[in-house]
Image (cartoon, rainbow, N blue to C red; front, side, top):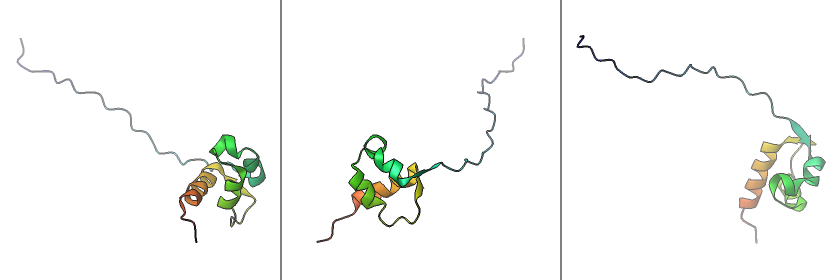
Length: 78
């Protein structure tokens, strides 16, 4: 009999290589406006306000969502 103890170490998971994320698909703002309730849960008017100063005609959904959150969290001027 051997006096050596077998250590039960969990096997290391293979290291994942970091892959570059593909660029996010951009959508026309008018298309996002038509479906703003389904996509973001806001009225089209809210989307208009959030993207008022956006310079392009296309935007990614994540960028639009980020701008909507920022717009809704702004304090109203009096």
